[in-house]
Image (cartoon, rainbow, N blue to C red):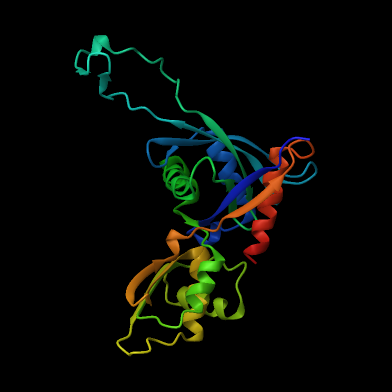
Amino acid sequence: MSKTRKIKCAAINIKFVDTNKQRPNNYAELFRDIQSKGLIGHGYSKQALLVNTLARTQELGELVDGITGSFHKYFDLPENTKWFDTSTRQPISDKNEVIAIPHGLKPEYTSFGYVFFPKRHRLIFDCSKMSAKSVHKALSQIFSYPVINKEYGDIDVIIETSREMIDQILNLDYIRMLNIKLTIPNPDELSELDAKVFENMKIHGLYSYEQIQSSKKSDGMTLRDQDKSLIRLSASNGKTTVKTIEGGEVVEKSTSDYPLIYTKEYQPDTQPYSTAIVEAGEMVLRTLQ
């Protein structure tokens, strides 16, 4: 039997800004479009990303039930890259001396799996090959292409925050400053109190919202029920930053530094990597409920 392997997964919330577009079929079509058009996004450190394969998660299911596949990732070497000759210890200034790399060939290639659930508009992927922040940056670029923007409008890309970090903030004994930033959530999965926040933002024509509070009291501020609701909402729809005291020093913590990470073990002999990704994605969705 082969050695047990692990998949480390992160999650991203993908939201249409236009509430009239927020339907599972549209989210499924979005992924089909970026795959068929071969759109490329760039993460950090010149990493490039594009959707490789796309398939249903279930043999008899529809795309709205789940889409699975893999991403291509490679190093996108700029054409105007400056070269250095280690044998002569001199930069190469003559372009004729540079070895020509055939157009279309890209180095440092790898692929990694993903699963996208249109009904919950959540993307779960193997983040051991490309970080959540880098995938976030690449997808934000892909969704901003005119051919996508014209069809679907603006699209928010938000990294899911660790729920443990949210709980830590909610249970802090001392908070000096609280800053909550969020965009209006999809109305498909809100608690009663969260729904009131959603309706209030919608009534006032707000898409984004920021709340900043600070306290000079020796015991800090007391979180109200509305504050707690907004903090929970920010886990999938923005970020929360607090200033607190640790070891006698004022420290700042932001949920953006703590992405949700889920690790799944699987046996390659009995379970393909592709189905392990789908199972991991289903587990992540449960943690978001």
